[in-house]
Length: 564
Ligand code: 5AD
Ligand code: SF4
Image (tube, rainbow, N blue to C red; front, side, top):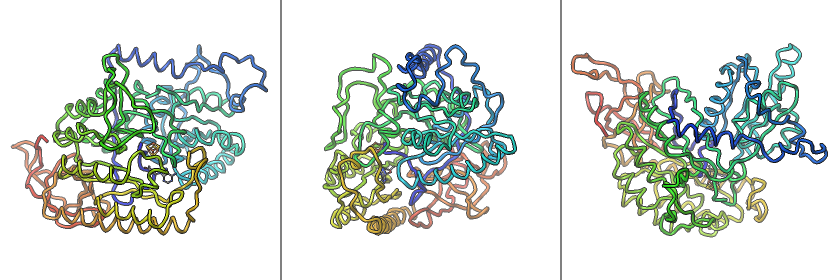
């Protein structure tokens, strides 16, 4: 990754509506992906040793029936209603769309009402203890509801999907007895079968991680009441093994979705009028499509200068710059963003492409995590403070108006007051406009859990976090104040939440802008004035700034239809 946002960000973050997509794949692509789908959802070794005495099978297997290969159609939803609750990062929103697409094909219906749901599925996050605690609490509430339902004879099944299913499989199934179905991030294709098993009164689980599952052939159902923005997943998993992070254990190894299916999905979104696409992945700029032999020469992956990886250099494959190049050519009026990247994967060609291509937003998330070399080394981040700052300089040189955002962790194992001061100084040195700041939360299985000491007291973590937030705000205010008087191209999202008189949109740098509603001349010469609406681009002049948003007046008396 960097993993996507799991908390409301300190400053701005995108939570934009997205809309419905019908993905068309060409037939050879479809055949290949079907085949892969079969392979990845196919039998595992255990399925062929069904005859084993129960004592030799794992606890989880006791809980599920074997695959029912010849009777796939038995696992039909029969119009039963599914209610989804999504926690954590944008990747989980994308996973919800995939899981729903799979169930929809099997005849399930989606409901927005918990009360009428036959199946409740929580798409979960494990990144920090707090995220998991929220889900445990919710699970208690849902179980109470389920018990009442049993009495009233309208049964309800509860399923846990995603990272928490992967991390806490045994606890969730055996100790707590709260859930009927568990599906890890690579097991959503198996959901119809798991739900059928659960209908038979048993708990059912599949938490197998895959080396190749990318759900390339699953049409995500983008859920978007007024969508002009969509998220498109391009890769999954992470090979970086930062010492604090659970993601490599819950989401498995890095793998990329074939370029053809990414482009096809974005073409469809463009045809539907979507104006902004965010490419998604745990480590989005480590994208490497090796699905075709022709992509696979022996050239080693290029890294940012001064950065290294914990794994051996990877060779061959179509890289992030190739994908970004092709994606940005689909529709010049469609803004392209990506999240969440790792600082190591910004070779100059990616930066030049961002600088040169008008519709690739000049906004880069650059998770630093710490400003201290000692801590960065303990975190196994593969770079020094100096290399990070050199990268920032290089980015600013190649993309002069770039907006930078970052993630930081306060109170990591062994962090001293001096280390913390270095983090504050790095925040001051760079000038980010958006930040996601967290107190360190120890996670089992990680390198830090096994080898390091979580020795910074909770109150010290909180105090340092508060200091980081204060400095971040001061710096973000300076960055935003420098925009006052400038003209910005804003993609309109809709009404401002604060006032029905105002509209809200985002700059290329992903900063929220509030500006007054005004009618402007219609799209063609004959039409009279029309209101500005969601999905329009408007040019505005920034009139004031806070650390979290900008205010503006609209500058041009007309809807902006410049081709970017
Ligand atoms: N504790 C606190 N923050 C963490 N992050 C990842 N793991 C942890 C942890 N164990 C943060 C990192 C990452 C972001 C998504 O979450 O800053 O970039
Ligand atoms: Fe991001 Fe590091 Fe976690 Fe991978 S291991 S998801 S790079 S923080």
